[in-house]
Amino acid sequence: MNKTTRDRALTGTALALAVSTVLTACGGDGSSSSSDAKAEAEGTTSAAPAAAVENPLVATFDGGLYILDGESLKVTRTIKMSGFNRVNPAGDEDHVVLSTDSGFRVLDATGQNLTDIEYKGAKPGHVVRHAGKTVLFTDGTGEVNVFDPADLSSGKKPQGRTYASAEAHHGVAIELANGELLSTLGTEEKRTGALVLDKDNKEITRNEKCPGVHGEAAAKNEAVAVGCEDGILIYQDGKFTKIDAPDDYGRIGNQAGSDTSPVLLGDYKTDKEAELERPTRISLIDTEKKKLRLVDLGTSYSFRSLGRGPQGEALVLGTDGALHVIDQNSGKVEKKIPAVGKWQEPLDWQQPRPTLFVRGGTAYVSEPSEKVLHAIDLETGEKTTSATLPEGTNELSGVVAGH
Image (cartoon, rainbow, N blue to C red; front, side):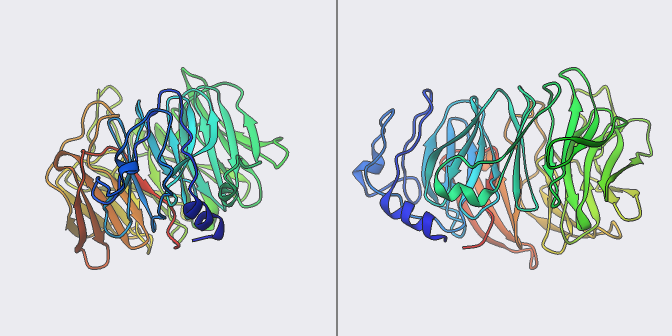
């Protein structure tokens, strides 16, 4: 734990509250021996300092979020928060970024405090970590904010780079190691591709042959990809390369990358008219050979099912209840690890479903219908820990491991 976080955890800081947000502190399994921690009061918080949590996880539920101990999976604190909230790693060992009704907010998960750091704006969307920088894209404004996650330890909003898209849209951006910024192009009605800016936000190049552009991932040797409705668009070494899907409509909207592998994992959908397509095939995109391979898993999955293992292996949580471990180079399913019961993806994307979060050699899998969270050792395939939570959870994430 860094010194700033340790001092903050020992001295305690007040929880920063939005007008519509009520925070409640709970300890252990959801209860606490402290009368302060048991009390609920709008606009106030316990004077008692919050103990630091090792490698915390954060899970959202209808009405708030849980901070959990990364080893025992026990709830260490409950924060009540209205609305539909999303959660992503901030890029350091202590914080996560929340997407709330009012914008992006930063949670000190280790110190169990909602900080004053906020990036206001309608429809906060993608949070991307790459090359030591974290990038936020606000869909309602098209604003891009870039910062060094190490600066979050000060408790103050980091000084960072900003960029305003030509038009607001559901987009994503990523900053490369050399300072170039890749950001999507589009409007509220139509998304077309991506452009690349230099350190001074001057355009270097663009490609508008990526209809319905969505999602991003980075592979080994900094090959950066965004998904299209007819394949995937790769940016590397100063130029774009389009890899076409084998179908006229072959949408790769969600991707997962690994710094140890040139192969990206993506979803794959072919029914443009479907209210909700439940695909059984995934895509493996070789960014070196510029080739795309489809693998049929024999089970469907959701956009919260994709992950990567420590060796770059592709991980997919299927609706058959198994965690499918796939060799990213051959496409062979190496093993199926029993994880949860059988499930079906709900029609509404905001509704809970089993969710995968991978950190190091551990896969964390939620089972909302049973109010359970599991930790699975990817090497052995064994469940090392399972914990029952007060409520079924929705999104699941955590800090970057390192304590």
